[in-house]
Image (tube, rainbow, N blue to C red):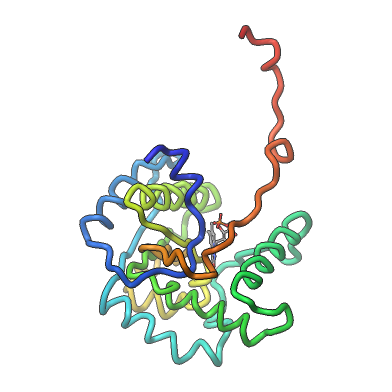
Amino acid sequence: MDVRDAVASRYSCRAFLPTPVPLPTVRDILDRAARAPSGGNLQPWRVDALAGPRLEALKSLIRPRHGALPHGEGAEYAAYPSPLNEPYRTRRFAVGAALHHAVGIARMDRPARLAQFARNFELFGAPVGLFVSVDRSLGPPQWADLGAFIQTVMLLARAYGLHTCPQEAWTLWHRTVSEFLKLPETHMLFCAIALGHADEAAPVNSWRSEREPLDGFASFSGFEDLPP
Ligand SMILES: Cc1cc2nc3c(=O)[nH]c(=O)nc-3n(C[C@H](O)[C@H](O)[C@H](O)COP(=O)(O)O)c2cc1C
């Protein structure tokens, strides 16, 4: 698959088929993703991959508790600054509205919105969960490296016909996840990546998020003086 097709066809998939993903595929994706660049070649990523009964065991620790605790154990890091200024606030609102519209959830229907949010902790039905953590001693540049790694994982998944959803929502259950994975105290859970085969027929997968036009975020100068 051409890298342009991988980029264009990736989206945050929020309904997966139960079809398993074999271990060699998961290993190959992660092995290749480690070619992602990182400042000073620190390679600050740690990944714990779960499938089958182990993944089910983790989900069943959270499932009975999430209804009463929609904020879980409390996020370990702020996913967004507060307040979230423009234009970011509007973009965040728009993507939430588009998601809820796709699944027929009315704006004021808080219980339905919470139920949709809780699907995060089922990994949207994905057969594999990649739990990505980072050494606490590292800072914003290494978290940026983590982003490059995560996107590389997601693009490599496309080469296998697989889809993904990065999920920072899992920080709400960071204690349970860290204990379950026996993460060293030195490490903080950043996110999970749901990995599997998309349920293409699911309404939640039927829409695509918007992007600002190129000239809204990039400027170009000097090119007009170059020889053709
Ligand atoms: C680091 C990161 C964390 C995210 N966390 C969640 C999440 O917890 N739940 C979710 O449904 N989507 C999550 N997303 C998906 C974003 O909402 C999505 O990337 C954005 O709206 C753009 O849509 P697209 O990925 O379909 O292009 C996350 C994305 C990133 C990059």
